[in-house]
Length: 113
Image (cartoon, rainbow, N blue to C red; front, side, top):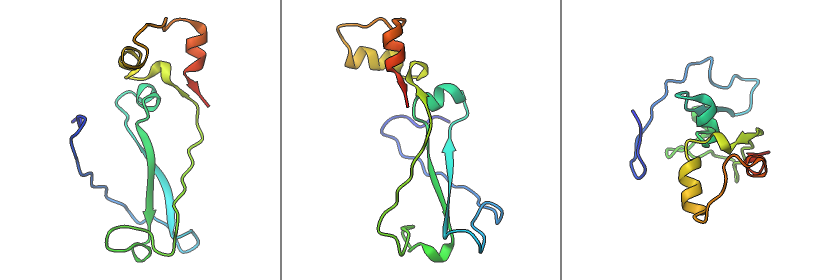
């Protein structure tokens, strides 16, 4: 079921004991969420993000981490935006004077390290 722009959808995950932190782990573990409709195109479109799984006692009633001033999450990957679901739309919107999507320089410029 797609969620269209401007729509809100609340996801609910079942987190098993095996998914969560153990006594020897930090209070929160980082996992990720992603779409798997077309993994290559989904990742190239940015459909991936962090998912923190924390001990219940380490978050407040709103789900914010206690005893933490900041949350920094880093994702190391290479994204080829030439494979994005939004490539044609982005070209039309941001490069209205045109660009040749098959131009090797354009192709290289869309590979994000």
